[in-house]
Image (cartoon, rainbow, N blue to C red; front, side, top):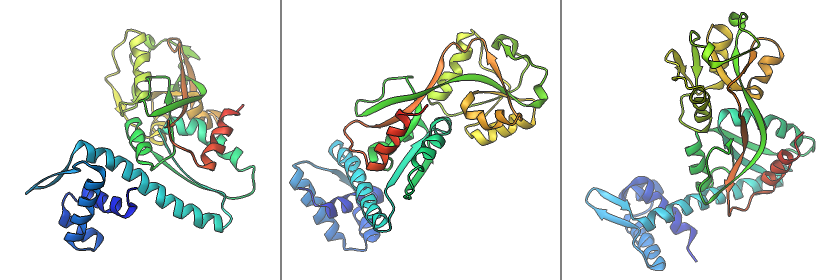
Amino acid sequence: MIDPRALRTFLAVCRAGTISGAARQLNISQPSVSVAVAQLEHSLGTTLFERSRAGSRLTSGGEALRRRAEAMEALLDDAEREARLAGQGVRGLLRIGGTPGALVSLLPDAIRRLERRPDPFELHVVERSDAELIDLLRKGQIELAFVTTQIEEPPADIEEETFAGDPFALIVGKRNDHLPASLSLRETGRLRWVLPEARGSFRRQVDALFTAADLPFPRDAIRCDSLLLTKAVVRGSERVTVLPRDVAAAELSIGVLRAIAIREACFVRQVGVRRLRDGRGSQLAEELLVTLRHRP
């Protein structure tokens, strides 16, 4: 059995890069840090650090332990927080992440359904890229990742579940009222664009629309990953964008933006959740997944 205190000391060395730096961070002596690391290496039967005058570098075994140690640290921190919340009548703590569009498409309705129960809960949400979300899942810093799904096979340790489909549309503001209700991307050559920057699943799907139409990517394009800014720019200018309809539903409902059908949009964007395959989810995470599975 690994001593959790030794793992915290090991993590401090990983983050500081040196034994002395970890000692200062933990406010303990350097020999105490060295002994803790040596005991870990002895109990595991492997070397965790390659040491040099420049500092300590993780071995492959050290990298593997670091991932587990970070997950353990997050688990212990959340366990402490959740126990305190339970004593205050709060039914659970959940940390989730997602890409902006997937969060907008799925989370608001799920929260409304969770709130049908009167007891409070604590929910933390962060926006990150696809790659960052996988890293956060592995570190235990989030339980669920809301993402565009069915683009590529997830890593072996990650499972993926799809909950909704949302068609792409050309989203325009009032300065493009002259555009018809549907058009081909071949008819958009003179338009100015706002398009996603991050090279994740969402951008690949948007890029695929132009590829399917055998068109080059627009040259006159603002690259932006903020949904709020993208919609604000389109609303107040002649620029256009491509978004799933649900992502712009609020603005479409009050008429400040308009959705134009794209003839080449022959596929539907799928959104869902990724989580660790062998991870045991919290009660609140399971409740959230149930609401998503039963969404209308």
